[in-house]
Amino acid sequence: MVFAHVLLQLGAGGRSTIPALVQHASPFSKLVLLVLLALSVYSWAVIWNRLRLYRTVATQDAAFLAAFRQLPADADLKLTAAQHPASVLARTALAGQKTLETLPPEQAGAAARYELAMHAMDRAANDELGKLETNVGFLATTGSVAPFIGLLGPVWGVMVSFVNIGAQGSATLVVVAPGIAEALIATIAGLAAAIPSVIGYNHCLQQLRDSGNGATQFAGEFLDRRIGAHLK
Image (tube, rainbow, N blue to C red; front, side, top):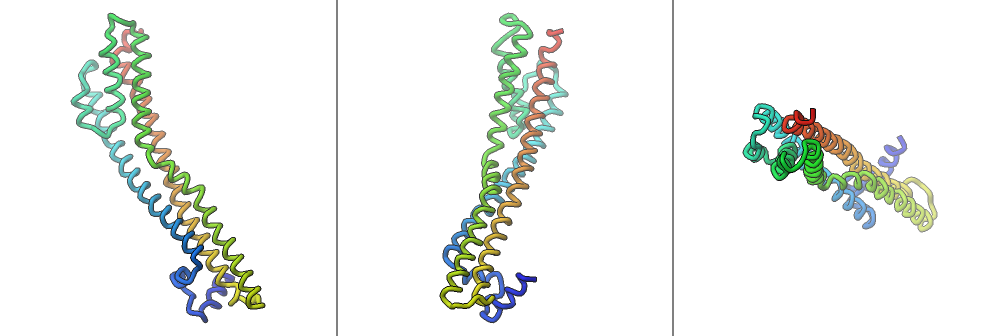
């Protein structure tokens, strides 16, 4: 009700709409809004790009895993991996296969080969997850910083209101309302940039965790098929 009453008071000056308030805002408030707009646009671009990539990775991981399970235990996985270029599991499998090929059974025991191949596969999986994590940290930064940038609006708006009161010697809504309106717009813009970024970050983080867990489980399955029998 208070915000609606403020807007009604502003109506006499022809500034009762949000675009009009933004248009007549101070240069500092406009700068804050531009910064928040840039953060919001880039955050949405990151969210869109990462979600599309994660969907592709999940699809190719599932397809590669199905193909892997249909192949003989000692089959060469290079061709199958090449058919799934976005698959984290494919890159992980190639790392394990390469390690086993460079360390034949006559040079090391099964336990040593298992451990070395597991380390190589873990490194490969971490490298792939690091690529998938590109720009995700920006979402966390936006989610943390945007509300504070938005809070610059209320501080500036209150200051402008007091300056207007001192200049005009009056504390009516017509004098105070413009600064308050600018403050509310900046605050809303900060929240509008932060909330989607936090949601997108949490979702991306969950997708990365799922990919990491899937790679770990696959590494165990791969090595069990290749050399697990020699450990028994």
